[in-house]
Image (tube, rainbow, N blue to C red):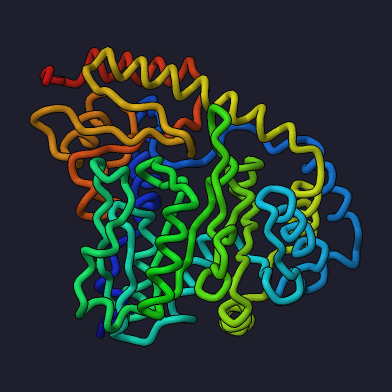
Length: 391
């Protein structure tokens, strides 16, 4: 007798969970592993946020069950952030919902919106939970290819009519993970117009909206007139404030979708720990100089890694957002072959592009979540131990 459902038997293990297992095995075997795979910031959470968390933990009333829709102070802080950063008004009572990290909300929005058999339009390559959540909800995935020649933006006109007839939800993600591409308001206007025409909900994953470089400012899809009629936007404090382990995020936008998601969530979870929400509110409302300081560090790492990659004949244009590098695999390698060679021969973890979808084949992703000296060491190991044929 099988101890799992037919559905679960068809779902592969989460890619980064498998990488973590492989890393643990190698470390146990005595190998010094450099992990450039997962996007987990090494920079510390700013001290004033940590102090606020400790202060709130000491309050006995904060140990009770949290609000199902999120602490009002946190929801107001999110609304204040949207007004300050994007000049967008959102109602903290009806258009903001607290999440246990944006990944949780992204996974739960799918069964909230679609019925079994409905299509979900997913960027390819894209964040794996878009696809996995669709499969778990018994939906059908349509991969929207993101190609370099189109600046890694989907071509809506290429989506077949038979897909559009049963499509209910579309994911977008800019700045993009893994491609690092960015989108302007003109693109979001096109997306909103497309969604209106075909009665499709847009879920924009904006987790990297504050990790930007060289005076680039990432827009919000909610800046588009009428976007709230068809769209919600997911945000996270994980990368902006180095709070990945805190598991705190939010969704803003269409009040009907947010109400539906709140019902789904209230029946499946009990919300995030109140002191974490209050620390997150403090982060959003407080001193923002930490963002620029962290971004300056990521930019220096970006330049260092791009220069290092040039020495092994891998050439990358500096991205405007995210702390990733998306690069083509060297001649003679598939994505998985190159990632395996780099791991086995150099002890360096990189993420193969095909793990993000079929169109990711031929690429690999590097996370800049380690200091420069370790990045230099990673390049040096690859240069010395992995065979790379000049193109």
